[in-house]
Amino acid sequence: MSMRTILGKVCVLLVATLLAACGPKDTRPHLMIWHTKDAREGALFRELLAAYNAKHPETVVQALKKDPDELRNLYVIAAVAGQGPDLAFVPADSVGVFVTTKTVLALDDLFPVETGFLDRFAPEGIVRWRDRPWLVGDQIGNHLVLVCNRDLVPKPPETLDDLIRIAKELTTRDAQGNITRYGLTWNYQAPFFFVPFLTGFGGWVMDENEQPALDNPQTVAALQFVLDLRKKHGVIPPEGDYNTASTLFKEGRAAMILNGSWSWADYGVPDKSYVALIPLNAANGKRCVSTVSPNGYVVNSNLPQEKRAAARSLLSFLTSAEVQLRMARELKTLPSDIAARQAPEVREDPTLRVSAEQAAESIPLPVLPQMRQIWDGMIGPYQLIMNGDLSAAEGAKQMQREAEKLYRDSAL
Image (tube, rainbow, N blue to C red; front, side, top):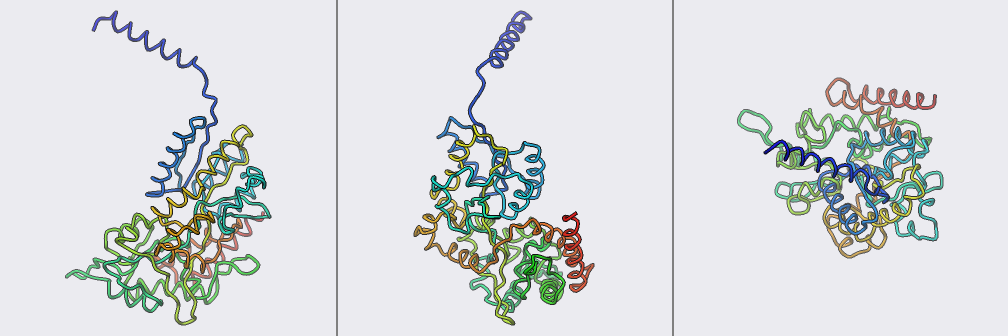
């Protein structure tokens, strides 16, 4: 190619670049969503946003996936500085932090009463605090159930004693004595996944005055039960973070797992596995339950007026009965929209029936900022307990001390 030809092509590219730079500016509203949707749920979310963008060329919607803790922290930092995403999809326990830091817009400011938007949702599908609505859910959940491999567990355990017996029967070893399949697994490094055992033994993380309540016989008994599953009964792995536990179950190297609806599509529910209520503690008649809350959308307090109509349209779509029914079919999430919850395909679905029953017995997750301090206070001692560095009684005392310290520090 001659030098004259090369120079000619360069000139054409330069002219094109200059023309593009001088072209009309895109004045359409651009909405950014930060979200925590992962795996199959994340794939469906991207598909829904693509469909929305195609149908609404007057708006540009973009999304960015973030880890829940990272999202919460970065959101507050950005929004306090007047920046951050326009919308965020988060668990309900973020609301207390966001409201306290004045980084979210009350939904009745975006959707006045006369729009009727908030009337579409079941009460538990909206997070209200200080008499204002702050989060609207596209699902009610974040609760745990027992997921069972259909080929290995024909009938789920009804009591904790049944759980131990079945888990023992299904834990297998090779000729060298190495475990090839565990009866049970879950993310037992995270305190959130410990809550079903805590509630099953009559405990809870805070008292009626919203103070940490971890140093007591109920917590000790629950911690000892989990330790016994590993050391005495040998039915759970020696290590159990989220990804390890999930992989073991998906590969058939664990017969049962504790997890929530966000994971069920990846576990082959309902074809390869099924969901069941977490067992009862026969000694006291208490059901083992986790917390329950909506996952949903909050709006940045910095959202400018010129974007609000676009945000209303997008939120109306993402939380619509049509979208929630599709999520229920494909992901087995419980709708928050009243009409969607009453649809036959939701009421008659066996998986959703069990999920709804477990959710109804679960503890509504407090949106107080102090919940984060309790989780943070529990996590270090809990992991030391599971690593064998602390006894159950010592661990309960240390959890209490850590949570109380974080409470005190937050008040300074």
